[in-house]
Length: 301
Image (tube, rainbow, N blue to C red; front, side, top):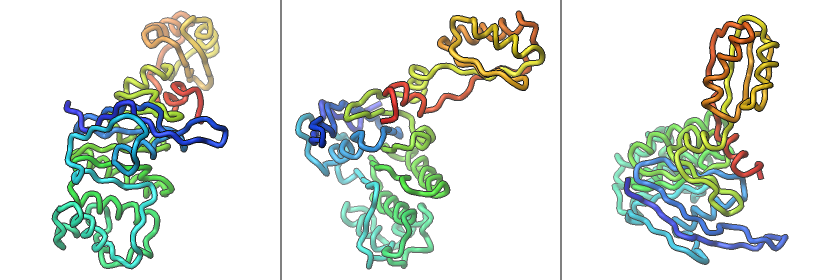
């Protein structure tokens, strides 16, 4: 796949109160065309600084940014979008389209508002919009320019569950048309929509690549084993296995965390059969991005 966005040795330093440098500290980012790239990290990790550097809103102290698309085809949605309160929603979208030379006709503006669920609010002044409505309006303004690269900084932050779900559905829909770079500290949101993940922690990129690879590399395999027979005996036998890290048992169910995927897949049934138990079901427990992030960074901060 061709690369749409690449950074090399990107640095932007800020001096923290303790004297330690913060910001972005030598990031090599690579975003292929046609993917949803999720940039994850806690608040203060450098996500917003990095996105502002790649979109030209800030200048780096060191390093380079390469874009394979015209900057007029790059749309940015900030974490707290703000608009002139006396403008209507339709005027906001029309102005955004006009500034990048896109179609700003009433029909195109109406289509962009419809796409984000604001089709009935085009004539309303945006000063009375809720946080969720402003977030969707910012997306409509971005969509109106028909971007090839859409950069979203914490697009679902401070929204209620329904609002977050609606915004993430829009991200998924737009990811079928263009390249999307999405930052968030809500790891479950990124896991829901991203093809590739970049983990940023204290200004450095700790991982970059496919989400399944991150989960496989940094999350211990887990299984749920449902049994008929001596559950306690199976649990005791499993704890003696060298590839088993942790076992919880009760009510005919055994939860196992291991260190070796292959050993678990072959050993679980063997141990249960040796202990005289019958296996009702055996399946892996789904890995999650939060567990991988904690394993990769050593903690949430």
